[in-house]
Length: 131
Image 1 (tube, rainbow, N blue to C red):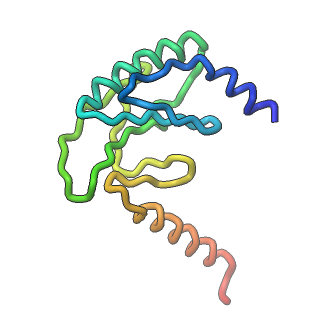
Image 2 (image 1 turned 90 degrees about the horizontal axis):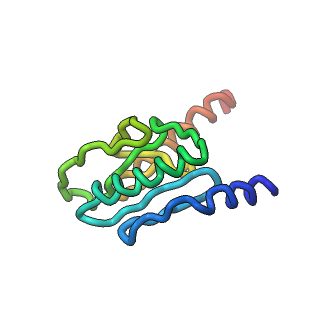
């Protein structure tokens, strides 16, 4: 019980994003959600603030486990933005990141998550042996 309280106190002074971005915090997972046509510039600005905060508190994060995604309606085209950077490492743009145990899809569909659950179920059933 004390760990969540200590974590909340620890991240209490985390920099707040601009009015075009929000933070979604749950346990030790954090998502930066930005909505704007100037998405990349807002994210880069916030990532610079976040980098200073991480350095100040000596917090290490694994940038390779910190992907970015652009959600768009199926069939809608957009130009893939250049990768942002955090702590000198590029942040990879992906189509299906994992967040809080869910596999998110850029087209706002459940297909990748359902496929993964189905695959795990078949593997587990196979380990139980013949019925």
